[in-house]
Image (cartoon, rainbow, N blue to C red):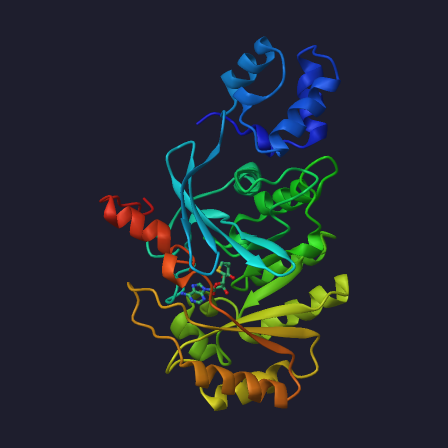
Length: 352
Ligand code: SAH
């Protein structure tokens, strides 16, 4: 695989242009074209410069290979990377704008029992430019540009654990918000982690004001270990301390994801223990009914049980929302599309 030009900031592209003895304004032309989602071969620059870039860099590192549209307007994208790997993303329409869910790794090695992304392990990390290019491609394909964005919000909730690919994810966040780029405000970005405590602490000091979201999904370590192997490494208490540190450093409240799974974490007693754990903390809870993955033996709670869970949290003074599950008719949950695609095409992609 060649290098990825979208990994570079405007400053880095300027240095590259200068090193080649090109005029300085070419840097902005290149950068702007890339941020508009153009391939190198479509950049409005002289042919010799284009050709020399193409010798070293991938023409289009993230190609939209397929699009599936759900009855609720959610679009699911299958992307192809330059090395042939497939990743997926979702664009969800809300009243306030369009939220794109991006992947940060090809697969995932966290092993959560309910999640399709981790079924085949992790193949590799995505570079910053590959994460960014998912957004540039979807923005362009949806008729957006740098002024009128078709993508207004971003969630790092596709395949992969963002903090297992820390450097590239932080670089991506800087590119996403940079001057002259697509400039999606950090406040419109949510980063979701399964709770890698050292990275949560490190991220608290980066000065990037995104919404930090933690996948909790359980109220005791014992129950969490049943569904999330990472719970063997970090106890809930350490996660809550890291969240408190995040608040101390950034002044920003944080969010917990809690997917309701029948027989695992969704009884009334769980709701009360969750409320006790979180009482007085500057946080919000996003409840969602499990989006059942056919390769897994877990089932969603009923709609009524989910509503009751929400009501208990509210009665106990915890800020919480029960979210709609979107795009479930098109394999909306993490990794479902890629998994079914690999299966249909006889592909295997286990880490080796
Ligand atoms: N690795 C990160 C981000 C990716 S997943 C993390 O763990 O947070 C984004 C969210 O979707 C996480 O809260 C994850 O636990 C949840 N999730 C994964 N599969 C799911 C499923 N089948 N149903 C409901 N939520 C799911």
